[in-house]
Image (cartoon, rainbow, N blue to C red; front, side):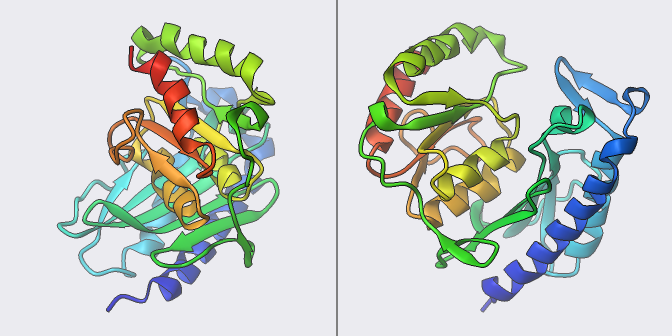
Length: 265
């Protein structure tokens, strides 16, 4: 039987070491070194080097595990286990020297996350959980908030940079949450947004057009922190379905209804 706790410790060390490498590169990054993958979608040599570092250290931890990684430095799908990696979540922040920036690593078993680690490099915060565990922040157990209503909630989201045919519905959600919650925040790192839901800094998070590496680790951490994670239909297709709603259990149903009212029309 796999020891998820021991594996998590190894992954935390890998994520923090990689985070230290990324942090050390902040002052030296130049726009001349930035590759444009698409509108508002950038990659640097630091992203690629960080991913290679992570994969090199992970590859011997779980026999026959595959890799699903943002920068594509290794693309081999495992039959049962896969590592899902975002080596540098928040690249636009990184190239501008702005927080947050996070390393996100998850292990899935039959497409279900069983280990999740997010390391935010500015505050040196490691959020993590594994199958059956509580969620933790730097060794201390964390829980989602107990905010009772959407009206009292602080909501996080991310702005789309692709799939603009859904922008009007998204802007309608922003308009609604501006006037019907305590506020809306946008950090530029979905992994960090999910980590902040897990520890109660945010009450809910939603976004569309995300990839598995944006959400795999954070979704597990939120769930193990007592929250609920779904797609916009209330189902479980948030890992590959490119849409996610995460919140505490008190507000999730109402929050999902508000998001879906605009985004599913």
